[in-house]
Each structure stands twice: as structure tokens, then as C-alpha cells.
Image (cartoon, rainbow over all chains, first blue to last red; front, side, top):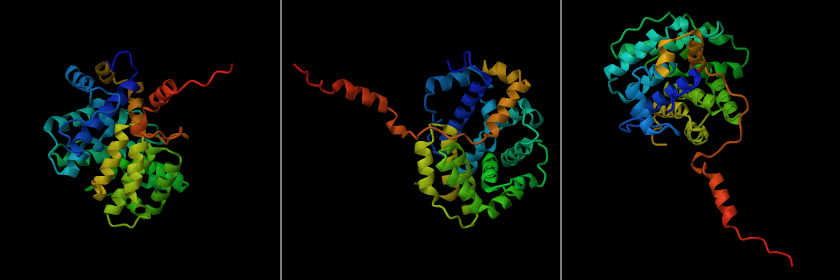
Length: 245
Length: 58
């Protein structure tokens, strides 16, 4: 019983892992969800049949990442999935997700990416305009900047472009430094997210001073069993065309 | 339980969503553990039980 007597944070984290597993299943063409470690298949099905809203926090948190496998594989998003993603926005509207004044702009950009991805599925989503992305340049150092880009990693998808992506193109070296720093700190969650940007930049034709394949493999092996981290590494592989590694 | 949390989307719960969306970098973490060898404790215990006893002094 994964949901009995648990805090909202634990429940929402489980929902995020579950939705990430479902997305990973689509990306890996596994014919179903790739079940997170420690999460029994029976629990997954029970949670879905018992609770129709079970996936909403996961869909809201993952945003475009939950739909990215369909974009990358060129498969249509099931209509119930797209509608659930839109419903997650109704339950957790952008102005009420609880972001601090310092981080609200990051949520706005992530929501923009989700809205753009949903538009491809024929669903219109009303989200605030994200502005000119000037905040991303406010970081005082490449360390802070790369972490900030990691928080925006759900924008690093083919078909999305804007001022954040322009900053990524110009900051390929800082992203590479940030990825190496995260690896040395053994912060594989951040490393996987920065790797998403390096994959996007490399796919866009910008030279990057890193060999991404062994780094992604290392993150997947040592990443601590987080399905969300594995999803990030697999998305990065697909974006760069390294699926076989 | 989760449905209750979702439907009663209080500021506390909403804050949880923001925290999960905008993950901060972690503090320095523990030593890496190679996932396929995560059964290391069991191997050590089995080795301990199977190892020969040390010779006794007379």
C-alpha cells in the first residue's frame, strides 16, 4: 500500500516516478510502464485503477517530459493521456504551484514547454507568457547558471526553441563544465538534466567538448535508481541519436 | 489518500509540486553504489557464514 499514511511529498514523488516509468516504457518501446525499483507492478495497477487522479501530480511535475517520448518516437499521444496532462494544469494552476518569487519564472518556462508540446497533440493550454528569458543570464557564475539550466531541462526537446535555447547554444562550454562538476559531486540527478541540454545543443550542430555516451551510461548505472533520472538519460540519448549505447 | 491530497490542493501540496519541479542540486552525496551489485551486503554475510572458523589455541 504505497499511499497509506504517507505525506503529500512521498505520494507526489511516487506519482512522479510512476509517470516517469510510463514515459520510459513508451520511449523504450517496452509495451508498458518501466516499473521503478521498489515499486511492485501490482501496486502500479492498483494505484491506477483505484485512483483516477493518481497520475496528476506526476504529470504536472514532469510536464513536457511525460509527453516527450511520443514526440521523440513520433507516436501519437493517447487522447486520455493528453487530457490528463491538461487536467493536471487545472488542478495545479501555474499561479498556485507554490514557486518562490525567485523560481516562478522557471515554472513559467517549463509550463510554456508543456503547452507547446500539448499543442502538437491538438490540445490548447492557457499558460502565462514566459517573457524574454533574461533571468537565465542573471547567474553570477557558470556553476549557478548550469544548475539553473538543469532546472529548465524539460525545455531541451526537439521542436522547442526560444531565448533559453539560444542561451544554451552560447553556453555549451559552461554546460559541459556544469555536467562535469555535477559528476564529480556525484549529483547524478543534476548531471542527467544538464546532459539533456548538451544533447540538445549537440543535435543542433554546436560542438561540445564532451563525449556524452559514457557519461550517460555512468549516470544510469550510478544514478541511484531514480526512474526520472533514467528517463532524462534516455531522452538525451534519443535527442543525440545514441540509442544503442 | 493521494486523491485527497490532489483534490485538497492546499498551498502546502502546491509547494510540493514546485519543489519537485524545480529540483535544487543536491548536497555532497554518499559514495556511489553500483546498482547491479546492490546485493553486496548479502554476499558479505554469506561469505562470513561460509568462511572457516579460525583455529583454536590449546
